[in-house]
Image (cartoon, rainbow, N blue to C red; front, side, top):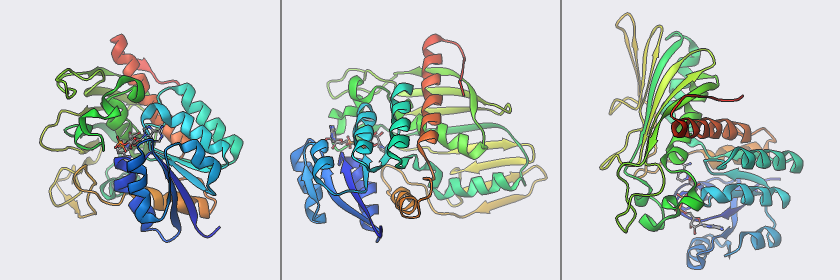
Length: 346
Ligand SMILES: NC(=O)c1ccc[n+]([C@@H]2O[C@H](COP(=O)([O-])OP(=O)(O)OC[C@H]3O[C@@H](n4cnc5c(N)ncnc54)[C@H](O)[C@@H]3O)[C@@H](O)[C@H]2O)c1
C-alpha cells in the first residue's frame, strides 16, 4: 500500500479544519469519500477534493474502496460508526471522547482486535509542541519527580466552533452524553497520564452547569464546568479545571510541580515551556504554538495515523489509551454525582 484511502464520517468542524486539510497536505493520504447526513455539507466538502459524497455512512462503507475511516460524528455515534468501519475491514481514527460508556469502549477494542485493524483516538494534545517539549523535560529527569500538578482547558464553548453553532449536538443530551468533561476534560486526562507516565487511580470533584445556555436561553442539559482532583498510582496529586464559560479567550495551560523545580506549559506568551529550577536557574523553550479554536495549527494526527498504517506500527495514541482517558472522566463524573471520591479500576 502506497497511500491510505480515507473515508470521512461526519464532515463538521474537526473534519473540515483539521483532518481533511491534513490529509490533503499529506502525500500518502487521500480523502476518497465523505459521509454526512446534511447533504449540502457533504457535497460542498467532497466536491473540491473530487471525493464521493454520501448522506449514509453505511452506504459509503459498502460502496467505496477504502483503507481507513475517520469517525467525526457526535459522541454517542462513535462506537457504532467505529464498529461498522471495522466490520467493513478498515482501520479507524475516532475522535475523542472515544465513546460514552465503558461497554462501548470495550466493543470498539474488541472489534479492532477481531478485524486486525488499528484504532487511533484523536487526542491530539499529546502532539502539540509545548506538550512534546514538556514530556522531554520530564523524562530527562532533570527537574526531579512530579509531586503535584494543575492543568486547565477552558474556552468560550463549542457554540463558537461547531458547524451548527448553538444548535449543535454538543448541547443535546442524547448525542453528546457528556458536556465539557467529555469534550475538553478527556483531552487533559489523556495528556496528564501521558506526561506523568502513569495511571490515575482516584478521581473526585465538582462537575456542574453554571452558565452556558441554549439559543432559547435555557441552561444546557450538560456540564459546562468541571473541577476535578486526581491522584496517580505513585501518589502525584493534581487538579483539572475544565470550562466552556471562559468567555473571551482560552486557557490550555499546565504547571507541574516537581522535586527539582516547576515546569510551566503555555503560561508565557513567547516560550511554550519554562522550567524554573529549585536553585533559581531558568530554562526557556521556544517551541511551536498550541492550536486553539481560533488558531488552527496542524495537529499531526492524520500524519501519525497514515504512517502507522503504512509502516504497520501500532498507532501513537491507540484504542487502549482512549479507553483509559475515557475511564478517568467517567469515574470523575460518577464521583461528582455521588459526592465522594471514586477509585479508578485498572
Ligand atoms: N480532537 C479535537 O481536538 C477535537 C476538537 C473538536 C471536536 N472533536 C470531536 O470531533 C467530533 C465531531 O465534532 P465537531 O466539532 O466536528 O462537531 P460539528 O458539530 O462541527 O460536526 C459534527 C458533524 O457530524 C455530522 N453527523 C451527525 N450525525 C451523523 C451521522 N449519522 N453520520 C455522519 N455524520 C453525522 C453532523 O451533520 C456534523 O456535520 C466530536 O466527537 C468532538 O468531540 C475533537
